[in-house]
Length: 426
Ligand SMILES: *Cc1c(COP(=O)(O)O)cnc(C)c1O
Image (cartoon, rainbow, N blue to C red; front, side):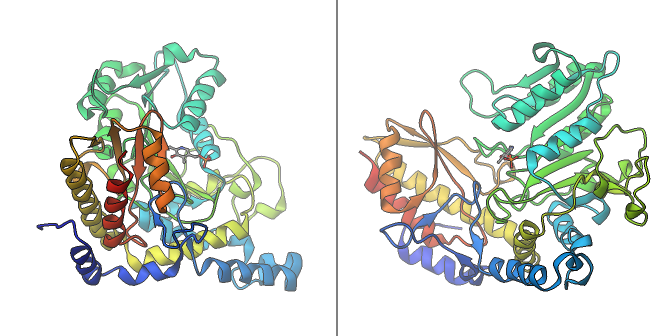
């Protein structure tokens, strides 16, 4: 399509957008003096669906009315509350229902899954991860290695971008996997890198890992609700994601885990157990000796935090209605349009500064995020953008991360971002 950097064109795109009505279902921040913010940080914290309030209110009312009996008498009994979310979350990540459970928080889940799937034995002791992974993942990986009494220098292997490059070459990941061979215990990578927005080919990486006998897991914090995932078909061993970024499920909201069907019943896997992972038919007999639920549910420790789960359910219902296919189509189109707008502004102002998009240009190698290196500009550019009402993310030394969300951002937002960007150039 021939894009134009004009308000008229952006509006015509919005007119034709099959998901345009979804924007009204979200609360847009009102704190800014420039009433209408351009909210491009759904990859940090998704906006609040207007239905969240009624979903939570329902559980507050049930609590008031039933007290503890709400576990069985609430409209959605709390005893099995998480089951309301499973199918919808499974549809988003391309999984069978028994492969998914919504529970805990993301870093907690990464630990629980690594306890099961990182089992250093004999020669096979190493973990392959991406350089500059999200800090929480780095700490989780380091502490897992140390937990087994191993040194991180020898056992945590990073794949970095090549000298002078920003992105990790997939061939370098695959080569490293082959090189490590029977020393490789686990591949653990972010499906979409939080910093560059680079999407990895999870299917190919999984196959390569399995070929050398390693387990393969992904952190999908920046992929769930963003990328069209097929975790089951790709054969991924395990994955975890948070609910509050692309999935709009409240600050610090609940997380999801995926454990492939082939591990649904694997008594040999070590795990840290809790009562909610216990076979639900006999859970309340409170017998000693842990008998796990089949599938992902067997990794639950605690009974569900119902209020947070209710917020997540409100958002999952919107995703179910919109469907990941339509979300994916708009994601690609709108991200490409935003890219066009930024390139146009960059070209027009190249005497003063340039904006280099470090996120892959290829739409099959990215999701909704664009990371922009602002050459010749410092934090003042970002501050100027913020003062106009752009809510974006700044990373030192000079990277701006923006993410147009198919459910609530518009092509007009992209156009306005471009206008503000041009005005903000020093
Ligand atoms: C956002 C994010 C986290 C955050 O972890 P929490 O446990 O939810 O605080 C972890 N890893 C990645 C890759 C993230 O993007």
